[in-house]
Image (cartoon, rainbow, N blue to C red):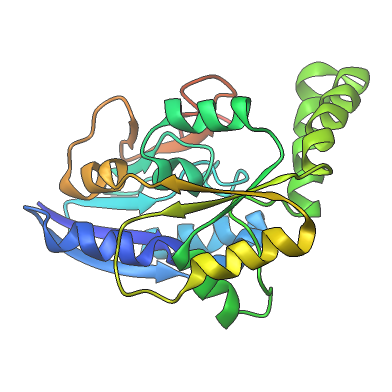
Length: 250
């Protein structure tokens, strides 16, 4: 197959490494990480790039994204299938599975996650040094409105309070080591950040397997395949993402 890969730049090293060993022909383009701060803008940019893909050249379009603050919700596959990871955000891709993501978030709430790519790209952007998966105020407002629609105002307020409790009480910094040597010394920056904030610091071993399978075309139930004419929908269940008819609103 000939794959067009559209990836968030915070996974650049991992994606290029996977592309180098893929049995398929791969063309990669990177999207600036700062667009995550405005999910509607990121969604529009991703759709623009999807629509611009040469129909006669590529067989599939691979998005190295999960739900990512609802940034991929509503994306429409045109003439070629879209493939995404069933993940909340890029932390799942770094850790290698939804199960491990859940284990970390349930077992260690209030954790900031850091990686080499993310720290490097943060240093080059106007947004400054930040952590993986950190929600913006626009993310929170969108989440609240979705909860109101589904569960009512009282339940929405309760859920946001529970979610905000761990976000406002970070106490642990986790550096995800992807095992790529010769990088920027970013781990020390994460250590320094933890010391400055008085947090516990831990090292986590990263796992390339999810990204590797995505780029190699090994698409099992960990991935969503959106056929032409379908759109990406958020399920709010364990599977995270689903494909629906593009004419049907979520």
